[in-house]
Length: 328
Image 1 (cartoon, rainbow, N blue to C red):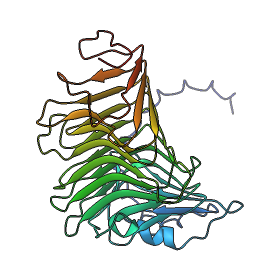
Image 2: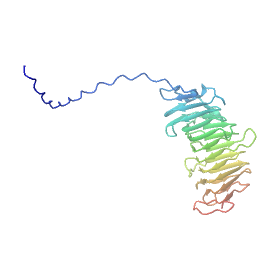
Image 3: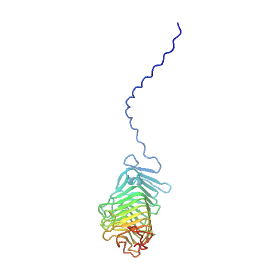
């Protein structure tokens, strides 16, 4: 045979075929287990450890060496039982406009039976809205606290008491308690007698002084509420240390009716022009001091029943003009 011929040239590559249609989705995997983190409890509308905030809080036993976080996922949680935030428990939501804990609890006394939430010493509440819409009885309270020190804390929380009826509504009611409240909004309306963003009374001796920072307090539907029920702060045998806040009341911005000296620093305190409205009520030896603050009132409505006149240092009125040492 003769010698083999040279190889021919390779042919041009063929065009790839079109991709086939995608296959059907596979089945979902089994749901994961609830949080396995130690001392973390999840409350959620579904998929958590609990669906009730009150039940979750009631099922844990915390201590200084066994602290708990109860995280409440987005949603509105209507509770019928008291949500008790015990010592060394942090009740935390997913945000003020995202997690809402509410109840229609009301009672005949200013105590935990009338409240949505109770805050005990060294407990903490943050990043949620706590509401009380109770009106079937005398009092409705968002958060009630007794005997707590400043180690108890409310932070980045909206507190609302706005039932349509009843006599007294309080966003927070403190009984011989002085927690730290910061970056929060407090409001109360709807009661026929008193609507106080914050009420503080001394029922156990000592002289409790809550610390309020970077917050907004409104008593009544607005600063011009004509119902003569709105109090930004109502204090008796206690005082408050206030910094960087706005405090407004339709009837009284601050009522310091029995003893104590409340100090307002770098803040704005305002009352409207409704009938019988006054910025301050210091009728029982109480006093209010303003430092570098706005003292906003109409005409001669600075104070009523004063036995101790207020004092102002480097403070101003609604026209941004300096007021004198007696806040005039």
